[in-house]
Image (cartoon, rainbow, N blue to C red; front, side):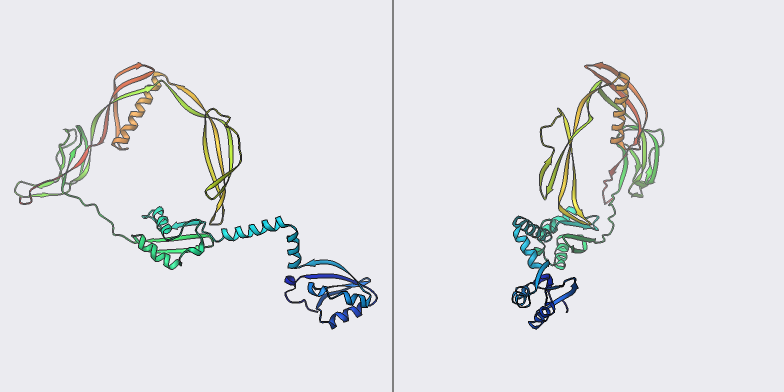
Length: 396
C-alpha cells in the first residue's frame, strides 16, 4: 500500500509482527481501514509501518489473532517533540536560538554606499539615517525602496539618481552624481611681483611683459612680469602668467640635543581577547594586571561576515606591547648634520619641493647645556613670484 499522507507530521511506527495468524491480522487491519505500508516478510513474521494514531487500535486485533508486535522504530514530529520536552533546557535553548536567529535576520546589519565621488559617504549615511536606514534598524520599519530613493535624492543635492537595494540584511545605496560644468578659475588683471629680496635666475613669461632678466637683483614688491601691455597712449591690461625663480637667503637658528630618549619595543607582549556583540565587548582571555612598567596597546578587530553581509558579532584583540626607553647619544658632528637636515626639510616644506639649496654657511656654532646651537645661512633657489591685482581707473 502507499504511504499515508503527511505521515512524518502525524508520526510513524515501524513494527515487527509475529504469530500464528499473521495473514488474518493483516486482513483485519485492512477491514478497519488502517493504512499500512512497507510490508516486508521476515523469518517468523513481517515488518510494516503505520500511523501513530492507528497504533492504539491494534490491541483488540492482537488478542483476537494471537499475534505479537515489537516496535523497532519511531519517527516523525510527535516523537521529536516528546524528546525535546524531556530535555527542557535544550528545548529552551533551541527555541531561544531560533528566536534570536529570526530577530537578527530581521535587522539591517550593514549600509554601504557606492558610486559617490564628490559627495562624502558620511553625508549619504546621515541622510539615510534621517530616513530610517541605519545598522540595527528593523527591516519591517523601513520605507519602500522607491520612496527612499526619492527622499534621498531630495536630501542630497548634486545627485541625479539614487538607488536603494536591500539584499537580506544588507542595504546598498547607489549614487549617480549630477554632471556639473567645470568651474574655471576667475582671473583679474594682475602683475607678478617678487615676494622677497632675491637675484633672478630664471624667468618665463607665458602671458604679460617681462620686466627683469636673469641675474637681476630685485627687492620685495618689484614687478617681475607686468600685466600692462602697450604704451601710455594705448594700454591694455592682461593676466600676467609665468614662472620666476631666484636666489634667496634664509637664516636659521638651529639647536639639537646631544642626548634624546626614544621608545623602543622589546618584543614582549600580552594579549587581551574580547567577544564583540554590537557596541559591547566581553573579555574572554587576558585578565590580570599589566606585567610591563611601560607599554603601548594596539587594537585589532575582526568582524564576523558572510559574503557582503557584516554581522554585529566579531572578535577583538588588544595587543599590549612592552616599551622601554632608550637614550640615543649623538656626536657633535651627527648633531650638526641632523640640524642641517631638519632646516633643509623645513625649507622644502615652506617654499616648495622644487626648491634647491645651493649653498649653506654656518655663521656661528657652540655647545651648551647638552645641545649644539648653530646659526646657518642658506642660499636657496626657489619660486619668488606672487600675484598683485592691477587697480586702475575705468575712465582712463
